[in-house]
Image (cartoon, rainbow, N blue to C red; front, side):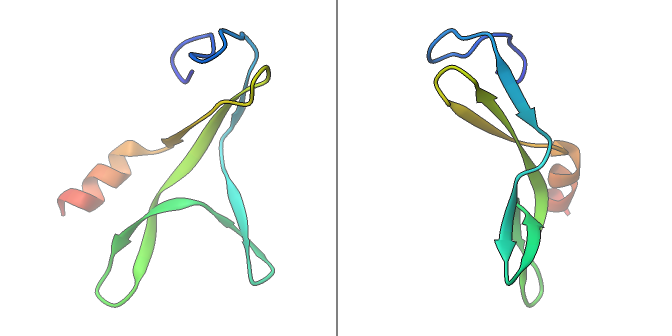
Length: 75
């Protein structure tokens, strides 16, 4: 759905894009991201974006900045 026009599940053509996905954490909105292990704590790298079919609700998640994630993993 990110690169195509239609939903791969139902063939629907209306796709909604959300550039960020958030969750509540102790009263604060927090962007969802993949986690990588730091020296002491895990930290979020590679925030997620979503593409949602308006017909069936099928959802695909993608890392919004894959190059930043690659740099982090390869360092």
